[in-house]
Every structure is written in structure tokens, then in C-alpha cells.
Length: 170
Image (cartoon, rainbow, N blue to C red; front, side, top):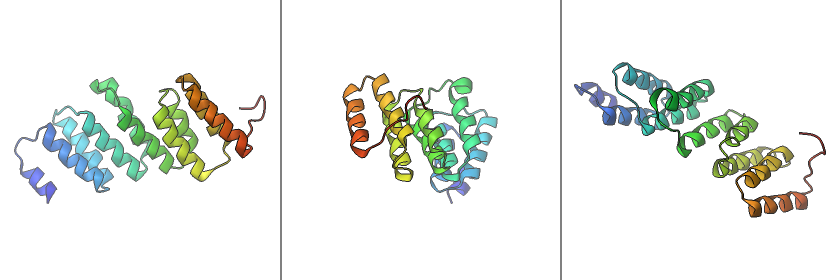
């Protein structure tokens, strides 16, 4: 019904486009979401932060990794929208759902985004509780973000669990 109403609007604007795009994304209609987004662009309507959030959410739910990277990279390059935490979390979630947990974790490192890295680490630990590399990387992220206390707590936790990094091995 929402699509019928949308189609009857004579001149769709950013609000109507974003509403229909987000609606499709939230209800698992990924291909419709991407198609509508592309149609919005062809109609000359500039996307906003929320429209990109909808597209990345749709990609995440459908496992469309390549498409998500394309849209994430275009936010700032083509449209001048600085990706926010919501965008990064959607991509990290997508990588996690696609079983690419190490890639998701590595994705959070350059941003020194502690909150995102913690979310990814939680997903990695669910799948592989003994993953020393993820724990070591998280500790390094804490150190680089000046979270000395958190890094120390994590190192103590690792020691108690018997998790040790093999010297000179990454």
C-alpha cells in the first residue's frame, strides 16, 4: 500500500523518497530498496544521511557486501555526506552476517572507533572465543584511542583465560 501511495505522489521529494526507501529496507526488500535509491538519484534528488542508512541496512540484511562498499564509498566522495557511526555499524554488521568477522574487525581499526570495534569483537568471540588476534587487536585499539585502563583490563582478561599471542607472529 505504501508503494501505491508513493507512486501516486506527483513530485516526490527527499522525505517521500527516504520514507519509501527506509520502509523497503526495514521490511527486507533489499533489491527494491536499491532500485528506488537509484531511481531517486536519476530523478535528481540528492540523498541524505538517512537514505544512505536505509541502503546500508538493506545491504546488511541481504548480504550484499559489494553493494554496501559501493554505497559507503559514495557517501562522501559523490555526495559530501560524512559517514557516521550508524553507517559504519551497518557495514560491520553486514560483514559479520556474511561471516567475514576479521574483515569487520579490521574495518573498525582505521577509524579508531572503539564502540564499533567492541561490537565486532563481541561477534567474533561468539563464533571463536579463543581468537587471540581479535583480542590483541582490540587491546591495540584501546591503546591507540588512549583507553589505557580498558586495554589493561582486556590484557588481564586474556591472561586469566590463558590466551597468549605467539611471539613474533601476527
